[in-house]
Image (cartoon, rainbow, N blue to C red):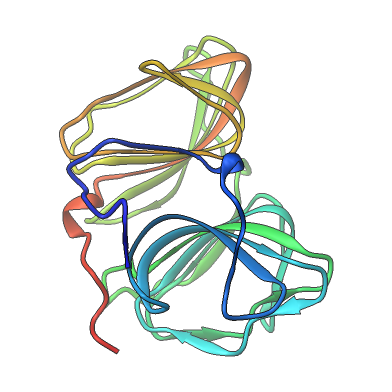
Amino acid sequence: MELNADFSQRVVIHSEDLEWQASPMPGVERRMLDRIGGEVARATTIVRYALGSQFSAHTHTGGEEFIVLEGVFQDEHGDYPEGTYVRNPPTSQHTPGSEPGCTIFVKLWQFDLNDRTQFRKTMGGALGARVDGCATEILHEDARETVTYSELEAGARLTNPGLGGTELLVMGGTLEEGEDVLATGAWLRLPDAMPLAAVAGPGGARVWMKTGHLPFATAPAAG
């Protein structure tokens, strides 16, 4: 399966408008944003766990990165409440589920296969000084990418020169980019060398963003 697999194109998806699709596990549904592959795929997805649902134990051969958007995500390593950012690198294992239910934004098969750095963070716990109405925290940074979380006041600007591409998820409020108004749940991907110039709406905005990563985008290995 290929969905939004041309990384040279600008893509905007208002995920709240998408229908939920069943996954192979009962009680787990998803809204696909981009995908290369079948059930083993380089994928960006919003996933919803019903109360008491669980995925079977598995190994993340290509790594997993996710944000808890609502509720509490759980596995044998602990509970991950709303606002938690997690990186599970290649070879990591777990049995994910959620007794109270949850919604997560998750990215699969997008790691350096030699990466073994595993961590969780509460987003917003280490925001930098507010500059021109925008405070930003670096969640992760390496030779391939930079991942940030930003809180913007109304009218504050969020910019990036676009080297290596830009991807963002609006977690709260609204963000205006070009002719699009990106509300909560909106996902934007800009290709390499396309600058980002966005402005927070009247209620401000909370934004997760990743930059520099698109030149490394590949399909997972067969099997």
